[in-house]
Amino acid sequence: MNKYNIGSIGFKTKKESEEYTRRIVNELKTSRITKDDKYFSFFNDLIRNHPDCDEKVGCGIDYFFIQPNVLNKKAYQTMIKRIDESIIDFSWVYCCQFKIRPSTTDLYTAMRQAIAPDMMKFKKEQFELQCSLCHVSDLDYSDYHVDHNEPPFRTIRDNFISLPGSLIPLNFGSCPQTYASVFRDEDIEFKDKWIKYHNDSCTLQILCRECNLKKH
Image 1 (tube, rainbow, N blue to C red):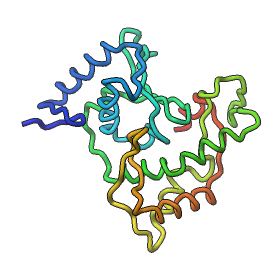
Image 2: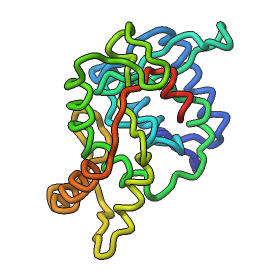
Image 3: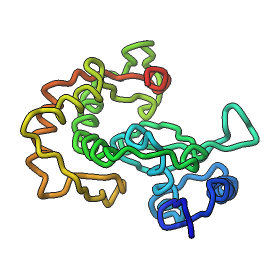
Image 4: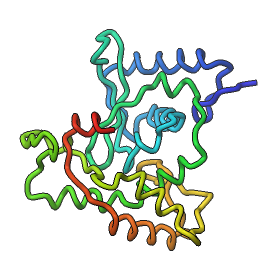
């Protein structure tokens, strides 16, 4: 009987799942894995095993891509291009270690999905994209990320969840474009209240990719 799963693919041991994934990564090498690629669903299932899936997926996945590992040129690392054009790495090896995934992962992902349009709107409305920390202003559009300054996103999120009378959803849908967890139609009231609370509470800023990675 299989003990570990990546989506519908079962493995008897963690090592077996790691070897299976390594073969795929080494086969694809520097490929881009878009939604019409046969391996997209596999990588989408793989990232769901990451304990920090919510932080990695962010506002949603546009596509995955693979690039040479900066620390080991003979190896490859897996990357996510989000729908807001930001980029982040994730360890496929870590995803094969099957760490316990918090029960709140789907809720947190749905909350990020709900505010994604406003995050992208903030970025598009900037007259000039410049990092608030290092002040670099000559990078590509995708190298600039929208970041929560003060308070951080997790504080806004946790404060909203702890409000008295909040009926927190327990079941979620799946976005047909990004495959991320989203609120269902019957939870529209919770979703709308969350969006308003977030927008009234947040202070956003633009960070370059490097500064954003260092901060988080």
